[in-house]
Length: 297
Image (cartoon, rainbow, N blue to C red; front, side, top):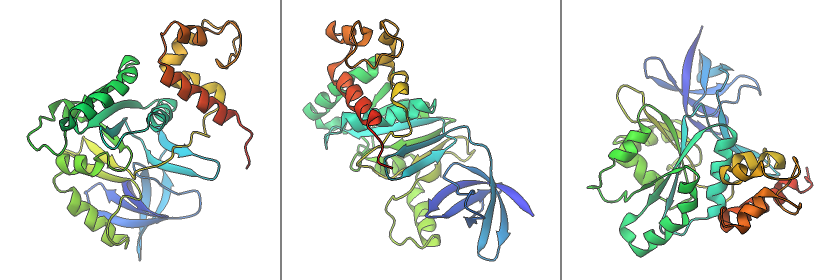
């Protein structure tokens, strides 16, 4: 007998599945094709060691990164990605852009949270770095997550009734955010870690948390990352994933313009006229070169 469930945590090939009653159990995939990720809706059946995944429901999206060696899936069936960065340590605009590009490629809404508002000058400098992202339509929220008195209503409004993947570098405050919004997050994490025999918890895979009792709002905590490969995106598709570049691409002389060296390029003309942020264009050219390079695999 099989039943439908939701994957709420993973560790290697084993996953933690929540059933319709809210009960959770460890399941393992039956066959190589049934490798589930957090956010998947799966059909599972009971077994002596917990359960087995029989099938995975068709995904509406999957958010992942891919380099030359492997693919790392973060989560499936999400409504939006919240990229959390901090005034300190200084964040990488390249890594931020890569995460936003990966989300846009999958048609997933994005927003940015800038943590450590209490740091004054450092926060002001970080906010200035994020102005180009605000100008391209990405919502940026100022946060001070260690300040228990800070009003988080604006953030809660954006999260309400959505499944949100929280993404960002180590030290940005992802765990602090989860613990602020989900009071029992530590307890839930400890239970999952013990059941999966993963020892003391460090976020090495994505974990699902319900924010409200009605289970309409959910957060996914994800591991920090030092690199974010985009090898699953064709170089010709890069422009459409960067709206500040794409808006000027229609003015190019050649329909297959790379926006790097061709004459009469609308993008490079917009750059000269200061309609495109130089830092964003530099990220575009670096990514285009990376994605156009011959693959070694």
